[in-house]
Length: 75
Image (cartoon, rainbow, N blue to C red):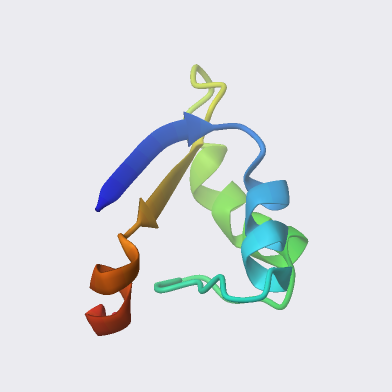
């Protein structure tokens, strides 16, 4: 399995991609809710506004399992 994590500043676009892409799944959205990236970002902004120095305030984590591994993987 390959895992990539990085700080991003395009969180809304990343969330819209996950919410709209076939086969993609949002595994956890603890303490946040919404139907679109914009609605999730409105929840995030409460905490993001507390840190004025950071420019990339979202974290993107992408898991890419091998095909055989993906068939047995669960949340």
